[in-house]
Length: 348
Image (cartoon, rainbow, N blue to C red; front, side, top):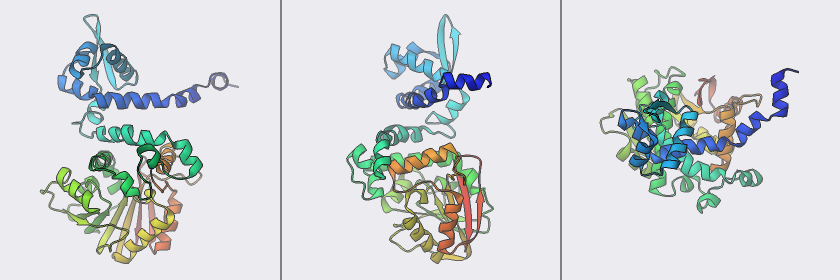
């Protein structure tokens, strides 16, 4: 028996890390909510804990502890200056954790902290009951998923910011996973903030993209996310379960089917097949589980998140293939990106 194996048996390092993993998440959440990374970025020089506390109107003791923990997590750099520690952002924090960062995840972190984290408090109940926990977490009926997700304009905007920040990081990988050049008329079903649509028009300049979403989502997208200067992006207000889909060369369903049961997913795919132009197709963007059940861990955890938040789940590529085949699609191709989200392209 190796020394490492013996150590694992006598000191449960991995279990302790997992047990206290939420401490890391909440440290990150708190630092973002308080504006630590933004304040350090604006200062353009390292700051002491006292300077940060004064700027953020926080206690000195609490600020010192938070900054120290962020340095331990390698989210901040710390150095000695005039016999005191001073802190500055790492390149990673400047890029992803400030509100003005090139690929800011700030809004995604806010949504995780203030919405998803509260739902996960009821994970045990979700597993026991087999249903989402919005009603317990927020006092909102869970009968309608969209009513739960968009329970107020403020919550809807928070969710749209979440989607926008995720696609700002992940969209390029998924829209370039296959050559989509042949598809000139693209509909992004549930396109939300339009971040994926924007990436499509950048990657495929000869294509146009229409965001198909609920009227109130379209209104928010136009007001906060999609500029009138984006001439190749348009909008179509509707409910993709209730309304007919306009004919298109390609339908994109990005993080859509994982919200729904197999039955509801089949209904949507069948509708897309009927409306799809001959030779057209559908692009699914989801976090794919391995066929042998071994991972990826992120997709496995996301599947639990679907349990506490929606009526859906993450699936294996073979499960999506069965749904696509049943709807009539053929020539199903799977492309794993090596990152969070993968792509599946199927043709009519």
